[in-house]
Length: 407
Image 1 (cartoon, rainbow, N blue to C red):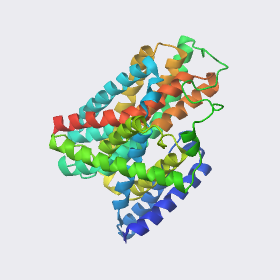
Image 2: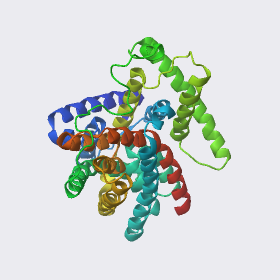
Image 3: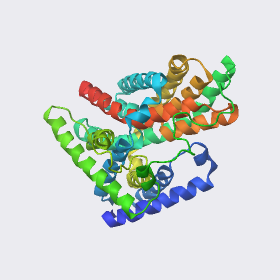
Image 4: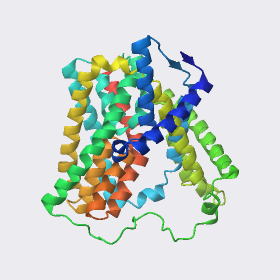
């Protein structure tokens, strides 16, 4: 069965609705914060897999729209990355950022070590390292074509999705127990047990500026303004990509579009101070969520999961190794580096989710622990900042260096 672009979009939307239904009905999915496109997309891919096994019917989709949605999503991430917000994290943010970048390197070294033992292509270790785990589904799918074409990993997309999906689950499983052990062992308590306000975030009672007020609501004007800025940022990003290629640096388009968004959102408002800017707006968040949801749904529903059967052993060995390493890392590096405090324990649990899954997994871990023991404003400020602003950009350069090394 061959589905054209229109039919692919219809199935993707239905897949998203299916994921929403599953997450409402299945406690396990809610508990471990699995994204709706993942739960729906994996089930749909299993259905198409059953068609293949029982009726010898293979499905294919027109995924041109999917690739555009990926670029739009990462561009919106860049447009939300204000340097002024990052500065609120201070020294703890810098420490965690350095630790996160170092861990990207360690994560790939673990992947290479496991693949050298199993005899699979070494680049598979990078795919099951910082690409799929620290990067998540979007990064795994974005790098898959390059890995398949240049490094001989014919099932790159399927491997990346499998590692990213299991990483989300495992990251949610280990974060809580790590924090519990650290808190009990060191007898830690919150510094401000009654302070539930997240330091560094805008006060709910503060008066918004005229420009912020304009983007508080979602209407035709705010959506059009966001689409205009996104289009300009994507255009700049594609130009930057061509420039990078000219200097011998091969990067996916989404990376340079992300960087273009960062440049525009931090410099244009300074040059044109009266110009409304959509960073942090509800309309930009809507476009971001919509593009990511459809992108993931299209990617997961089109997976050929049956092609992974012969790689089940190496993938499971790789994931076990990554879980062991990140557990040791957060307990004996992240926790001491962040000060061995209650906040440090919460940050450790969050980073376990971030390093294996995604920012929502990190937040879910920290929320579960702080609900039991008390608030940690610092953790809820700096962990999402590292996950949302820095990981994708730093990871792109780390991946590039490792692929050049094994190539």
